[in-house]
Length: 248
Image (cartoon, rainbow, N blue to C red; front, side, top):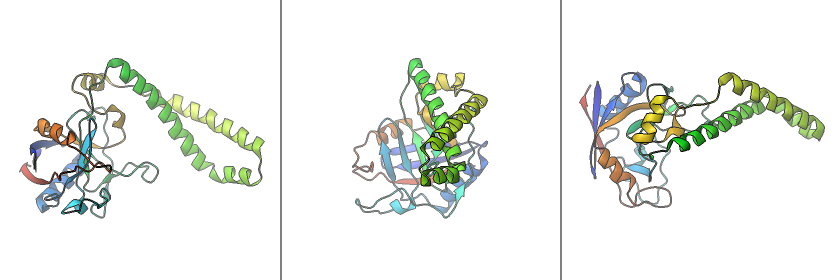
């Protein structure tokens, strides 16, 4: 069971890395052993959401420098398992580029975030499920629109409004059929229990790889997420880190 210590200017955080996400575990251990994270900052902090670090460009970065795009010259294949590992408070997850340029949800080679989030009421989770269903349908429709892009462009060039309307209705029908086949998104009993007691960010489940969790030092994460930030979410006072392996 691998564990690392993230030593920060606000205290230490002990994180256990999951054996069930071996690609992310081994990569994090490799970078930690190389000292890759040492001197980097928690460069993106959003209160009641998460704290993010792991950008090598943040080492000694002046306050005006834009951060968040640095990392090694590789990405990691997703290891998403929402049945076992979720975005509960204290979860360690891999940052990544958005779906529009990263449909396979590949993770950043080094950037990570630790979840804070909030505690939800059962009714709020029900509302989130509805929003997730709408998002599922939107994603399916967007994928279909990409598949039919040449047809759509041809109809637009010909200013064929009737044809565009007919194609839209066709794609909407296919969207509903595919969404029905997938089933309506619903939180598991594990998710409901975690998000109504411990808290977290349930809307990130299935989108990012969770590969560890805080075992000690959650109060340090709380301090970090409460720190005062600039307009770009960077803390006004730098919060640097050193990552050491304490168990492999």
